[in-house]
Length: 258
Length: 319
Image 1: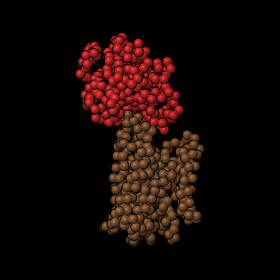
Image 2: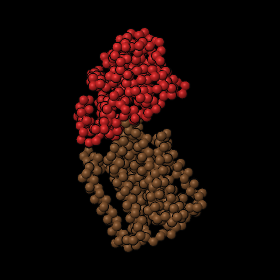
Image 3: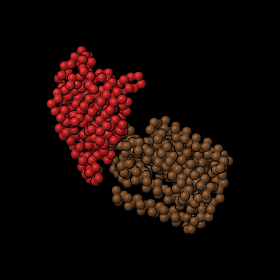
Image 4: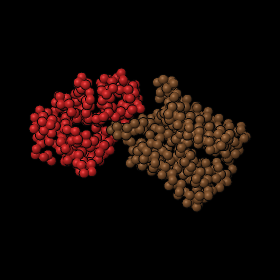
């Protein structure tokens, strides 16, 4: 289903394994506006996938379709070999798709620990939910990995921007994801904070979590991604190795405006 | 949790014992009339809080549920002479179904739109009952209280004790919800529905559950009211005053803890009873409005919020 202008990535490891996430012929319209136009892409297990594109190109719409916040009319989303196109978001989360939000959306009346507990209670692994003690252990270990252990009992209303981003990633981890979609987790952060979050995402990827990262910060995308896809006006204009995509004249024109 | 549970159930048993002792020791009927109304408001406020407080869906349709409870009892009593227990159970079932329908509304409506829809619901149902001759229509219907059951010497005392039982049931349910995963899920969806969904919370199912529980309790609380007054008419059974009072009680008491609506209902209910006797029933409404404004401005978290603030951050989330 790929249009000819899309460069097929090298097929070394890809064809051997079935894709974790397969998006085929996905179209999403808002009234007369086509936000996504016949998008097809496979995400391999364990892949670090960068998603770029100018504002309004359909990146967030695409991940809303992946996480289930939007229903798609034509097109299917397949996860781990199962068609999830018609499933509501909470079922997708339980199957292993977690996400963070472009503008953090914490549960504001709760502490950091309680935010994570929601994920553990409703989408965590059964053996961890059974006993409250283990649940607390799991939660603290996630917070420690995210560098938030000292903030466990702090209200989310008191967190800084970078802490909120980390909290969102931690909450996503509490749902025990196979696929993590990070929607501009680094937007508005300082350079050192960007490195911090990037390192966290790298360490998660090393633990065999597949990650789709939407980002405007190019060094971060280049450093992070195995593969990059560029959207423009709802269409894929390039997909492949980061250097190749960045070198693509259409990407430069659309995205960098040169 | 377990220690809190034991304390809670001991408290509940003491409360019921005290209520029962009252019926055996006090001969004067007035205290039962007055306390019955307060107990009824406690049940209604707790029921309201399950949906309005925990889930954040502000329901102005308390009077719709209450009135349907009243008229379920009236219908069953008139048609088959059903005993009180059957009236209450049937009202709870009808309320649960109504709650389910209300829950489906939350699919498309949030915030103020949901609230307006619940007012519309009240008007629609009231109009339907007003035009239903069998249950008395607009003129209302008179009913004769049957003889009270064994240990009770008057029917009103019996109703008082039954309402006390409903209070314990309602508090137990509300407390269970607050301390369980259901409460955590409702709190999450109250804060942010999309984020809750994406964290694995089945928001629709939890909202339906909250609506069903809330509706069933409200209707159950309304069922004995017909027998209490020996009379029912649509304009008092569906009086918007129930909706406003119950909302005010929950907000003034505090919605974040199951004890909030109880505190609010006792405080406002007692004040209303006192004012009705000493000044006039019209002043009620004025006082209610003034108190609501004072609390919304001065203590938006209600009395529970004030207590928590006073105790610092200690003692949060205890049973």
